[in-house]
Image (cartoon, rainbow, N blue to C red; front, side, top):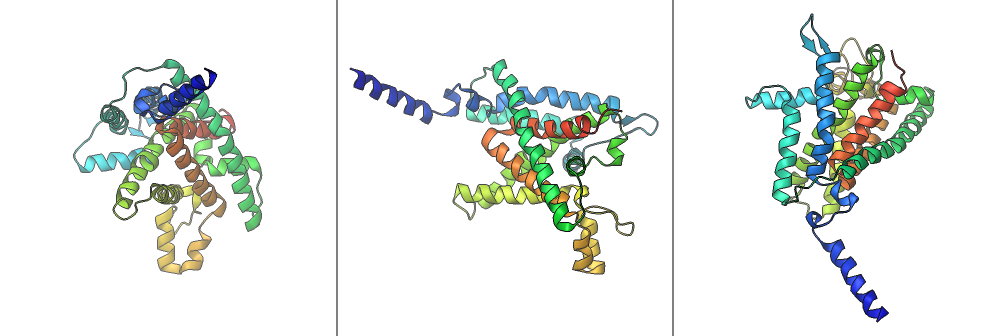
Length: 303
């Protein structure tokens, strides 16, 4: 009788493992689903949008500081005639709801799952802080520039003087916005686009995943100006390095790269891509926002 029960239990376990995600109710499955990701992200999107009005807007100049990823997304939508407040945030909600409907998932939201996603995101932040210190300090020793762990962390997170002089509320708003909109651009959109292009000539899912991780991670590094030194003649950022390459040659262009920061941003891009592919969009946004909050607010101090 015990053998029969063991066989039945084995069959039930295998059937549960093979069941579609919409039929499974464990935390690791539900936290990856679009509906729980949306519920998890709504407070972060609202916090950023409200914070940008209160802390990132200059009433006198009528200018609001924006995350670069958000600006790029707004430019994309404006090209198609879509203009308005919170357009990228609304896009997140629409995309996740469409994914939810297409997958035919259940409409039940479990609050404990959403709460667990906050705790899990915080757990994923810790290895990234260690990675920031290890990668940037190792690069500093190799290039002979020195540098301590705190300085490496601050540089890796773009906590330059322009951000350090901001009130902590503004820095917290930027941290949350970077988590939401950079992950929207580089993970949700760019990984999907890269995978779609690769499907035409690469059949292996594993190979496509590796290429997607590498491509988006390199783009993530190029996106950050802190990976390159400032030069008055050409400015700062990747395109200024290209200009330096054309004007002064490869030696001068390579000298513009801040290798510690560039390596960290690439490694962080790999880290975020792996979290996204394994744990979903909600958790990777929480991880990115949590890391930026730790560096820009907790490690930089309040002012």
